[in-house]
Image (cartoon, rainbow, N blue to C red; front, side, top):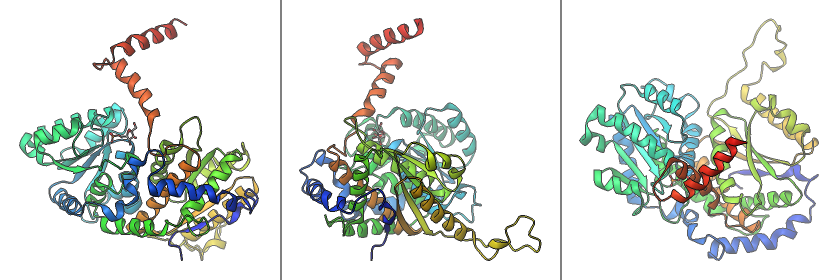
Length: 454
Ligand SMILES: O=P(O)(O)OC[C@H]1O[C@](O)(CO)[C@@H](O)[C@@H]1O
């Protein structure tokens, strides 16, 4: 039986029984493109075999570095953006719970992990500097290109604090750089200063990198079991190899969303029922959006956090424009459950629930929402994840990675590049006066002048 239960039983109203068999030939072709490397972007498929082919020596070094960080630091500042941030953050939240950083030191199984360099917000940096205060800390700077502006600026600032506190020599021993094996400014700086370095493999794009040192070091620093994470991904990679959509749920999910997309369902909401899974959706949004949104097409990936957002977005989902798909990631057995307290009086009218637990009510809410939204004209699919373990998370990560690759090929695009993100970067560099952008600076200054005059 499949480890993750994929439920598409509510799609009957939206997908005709013939449609899956009809799209099978395209799925088989997409599978071939992916596995044989004949599809676009084939240089970036190394994540496919990563759960088996990762660097085992480096893996041991990651565990050793995590132990050192745990022994000499109270806080690890993880600096990165996009794929160099979201995977670590979602895993840290999923595996450790919402208030992990606030737990007392003797209760927490690892160091506090905080994130920087994922925006250009000065107040955020200010608040984080204050949050760290005089605590012992280390830095994990993560950038595949080694040139991304947001993390580079944050790195300067937190490095300055580190050097002030420990002096240059000790600071260099507290900086861990995760970057390209050979190229980029960060690699050069790491070599010059002797930082311990970890490699983001060439054939793994940022959004597919959570199972490389990008995710593994921050996750290990919280005391989570990264071997189990890799084991879950390995078993998942073995499960999702059959091109047959009746035997491969990841491919089936890709095929169904493609069928729905062609009917005008152009926005997909990834939904959870657990606050510590909010960041999972953020990770998924980059994975889907950067992979699929190109050549003026692709499903727009969005998210909703339930039951919270049922009280804000719920109205729209039930009755608004009918272009939505919902994909729920339902955690079936959270680490904790809580009895609803019994009360003699029934002033709050909750007596009918007093033999239930909070998780049971949450699950009934999920079941009720699926039925209501299906009635309202929204196709709903669910991926059930059995528990909150590292193994299950590894399994789930791989499910979506392989699904989006197939989905991208089904839609006739290269799921492994992201040319569109350069446009804003070039404009920003030009407006900031970066050397080499002089011509663009002139052009943009003219455009801005025109705008201001209007
Ligand atoms: O690891 P890097 O090179 O700093 O890039 C971070 C992120 O920026 C992007 O290149 C987009 O700007 C993403 O694809 C990537 O995940």
